[in-house]
Image 1: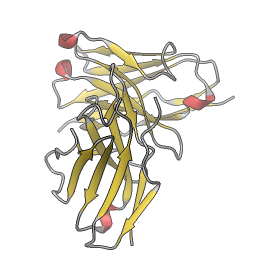
Image 2: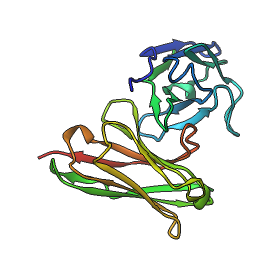
Image 3: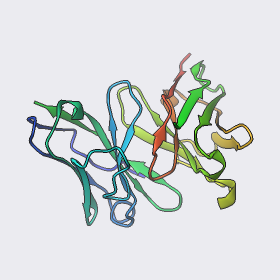
Image 4: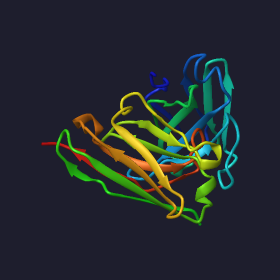
Length: 110
Length: 118
């Protein structure tokens, strides 16, 4: 199972929006609505930000939103804040009790 | 508050074995699907495997790179998850995280570092 494709980096100024893509295939992203997004700060454990494409766990700001079209899922961070600078990973159910992660995107707040 | 605490990591020679533990509190462990995810130094996240709740069959499932070498188990009486790693290779060097859930890992431990080197 190949890793999902994400851009290696993305950036934006405070207050702006940034969108990260996560491209897979019809066997993973396109086939199931089980796409999640994780935020990871250096030296810390990942934190769930979005699950099942667009749902937010309690406590996650509504500045974070998710969507999906075909084989590509997206995470949008609106109103960028300094604390949003982190690595972001997508993941998708890939059938037959299998899970695949994206390669990760480093978000920089300029 | 839900807490997951991994332990058991360390330096091990290639071909060796190691067992990681993940102690869970603040959560009804019996009902939870539990996963292991690893992260090689400077690299991305990689799913290792899953164990379902006993009520859902208690079955285990593994990523291709570790299948037949790693084994996940759980002791619901101790609220503890395990990862038995055999025939370790240098490419297994990583921080190993336990997490509650499968496609939606809601809570994560702090991770334990496994270094496979001679």
